Length: 513
Image (tube, rainbow, N blue to C red; front, top):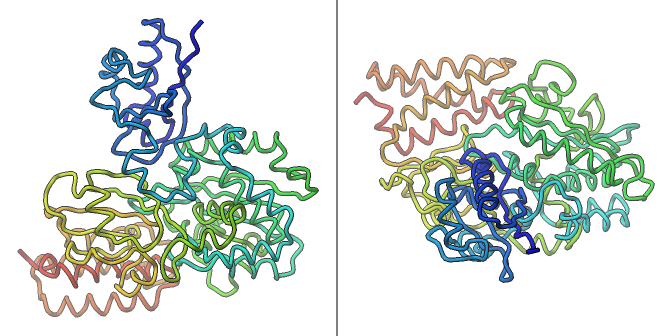
């Protein structure tokens, strides 16, 4: 009896939206019809969205990839002997050697698309839990010191040094502490959090347990956006398996240390991506921004000291503990250390997740790695950092991708989402959209954000209609200053950023045509 050939087909949202389930069914039916023995493994995605569904076949020469595969191509793939790695127009060669993947530095997403996301044995076989086992042998202060020395900063908008936040929580005396993971990934063009949870949930679990050990917390909470049903299903299953394996619970890996994680769903409010609004939601209240101080590190969830980090920040921690702070710090540039997950979206030929060290230029990422616009038209602008990020014109794309360079340019790197626009985009409409988005998503607590965004739409409409252009231009400038300086949180404070970038680089598109 012949041994079944293992065929890997992603079970990840992007791949599923492009027909991965249908392709898996077609391959199984074709194999049965031809008497071929196949074992289909539903792995995660490698993040090359432009090649999805990316089907990989295990051969003596390694895993050979084919993509993007459609159901209609399945018979021809069998005719070409793809179960043995045969030649076909869709053959991409060895999966690890695909240039788009081989050029990456994958520290956080090393297992994504390689392993079965729900197999703890697979996770361990590929280096998982090494960081946690190291942490279990260390004092809490030593864990915090390692994270501090690595240079890891929060992979969200503020980019605050992770070690400093953890040190504050560690040194704050309290009967109870929490580790809160912000997985309310709402920025346009971002999908790294979802991808990591769907493709490597154990990494987030391991990172959260290490954080608990570091600060003296015994409970973790993941706040996941409700629009991610597959991530919810996979993470819920992984949590159950983690408890069965002793990775979570009263005796983590037999250490006598306790830590458990519960999953909570958001209700679709963008503002709950802001950490204090998220805490309000977790406490069963309306998602509104809290005034600071006190900081959440001192008085966070239910008034207890709380570590609040997003998915990518916590997922970077196991590598640091396993390989050492220096191994992580060796990557990156300036004060931006390590790697981050750049997410290429919008009008781009080769979209997907690309993990690389900080310092890569935006032009290299968009034009060389991303292949330019999908439409083939000239590139006009790139928005980085979500719907409140600046629009960077094509002529300015040589900016290095690090926190300080972007801040100096009046932009923000944020969560690494990159949305590309060609020359057909109406940048005046994009500026108005920023105000409209803020008006829709504002929690309403502070006047500059709640009222300013509505007035902003009105002023932009008058400008674009040609009504008193000089007067309304000055009014818009004043309004942006009030929102920037007077808003309680980054929702209103950052809304001016995309508008100001359009005023600077595409001023003509805010005037009547």
